[in-house]
Image 1: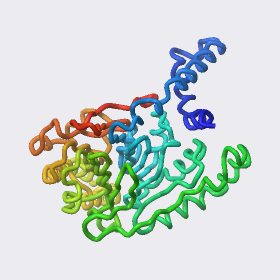
Image 2 (image 1 turned 180 degrees about the vertical axis):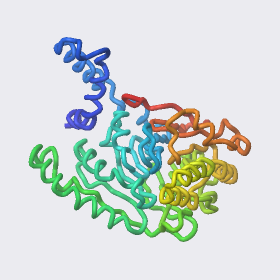
Image 3 (image 1 turned 90 degrees about the vertical axis):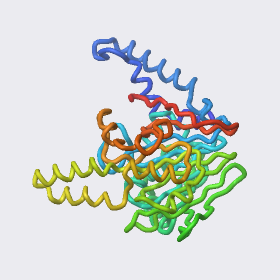
Image 4 (image 1 turned 135 degrees about the vertical axis):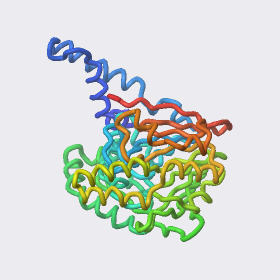
Length: 370
């Protein structure tokens, strides 16, 4: 049964991987040759799945960025999603549109996802909940998937369960109850009251303690960030927030802070261009984003105040479709924080915090086609 789960959980990635082995002009090659390339690609992917790499060996607290974009378009980034891996179990913080696709492009073993932790209920943080619900079920999830969140999570989860009810029926009917048990399809809301100050433990087991704390995303309330503590290492995911004293407090001493970032300078330029083009509605909508996000320089100052080891920018706004734009995005950061202690995140970025100690180790999880 486990082997079947492995095959089914990465079927889409297998197909793409095999397709990418068909180099050259496929239309000019005999169909038998193309079929041979396809078969070899599937075989190679099955023999070296991501699930068998050191990513899940339990020797470190690990983070993989599965969505570093914002509502603004970026062809290389899914919307908000951060995977935190502890002892082989995966916890997702938010699951924005495109995040599940990014996970599948990595060949991520979706049956290892143990729960979702939502920071708030903007569409770019919850939009792929339905896809995650379905794909983890296909991957072999045999019980409802826990979705943790502050006030309102029951409404969000109930909506996705209702919207996917017919899909559940179809898939169980097609594949059979033994492979797609109908009761397992559901998301299970795990609500908590966001603390007014300080933090609240929202999940704990023998390996990890996860705490939630309020951040400043007014007028969106509640909005929280999360801290993961495991084996003497710690990771904080900010969620969406403007500068926040509570975030600084709850991030103190963390090995890694994954912080949202919006370039006020770049957004200002978009605003000016929109006005010049007579797009007053667009100008207002873009300008409004300045009130509840954090400029990269301010996030660096917060990381300094908290004594964070490594700062990684995520939820990047606006998009950075060209590498040269990154220089503009982080202009001024190096003046307030050591360049060795921060990085601009990207989909597939991996950060390891070894339980044996030592500095964070940055690398990349390969993504098919990117």
